Image (cartoon, rainbow, N blue to C red; front, side, top):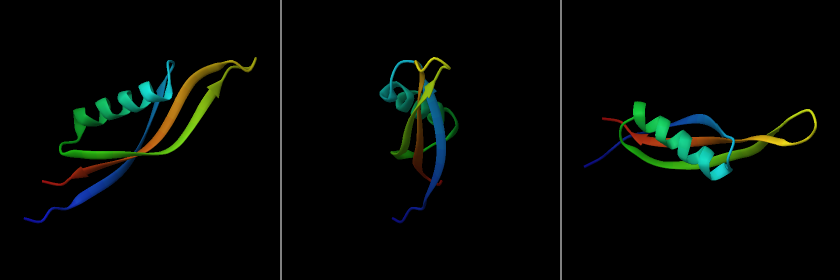
Amino acid sequence: MSSVARVTEISAVSEISFEDAVKTGVARASETLRGLQSAWIKEQEVELSPDGKITGYKVNMMVTFVLE
């Protein structure tokens, strides 16, 4: 049996950690997309307040899902 997959890019932010941002992004993607297979973390960055404190952890990821 053959299958076809699609890849889409999503971003997620957490105030806690990069890991939490990944979990948040995957959880949200799973609400809309069926057949999730994997997620590749493309970029990570931190958001900063004007005084230089970290206010958020952002990830950009590529999510792969199988088309029905």
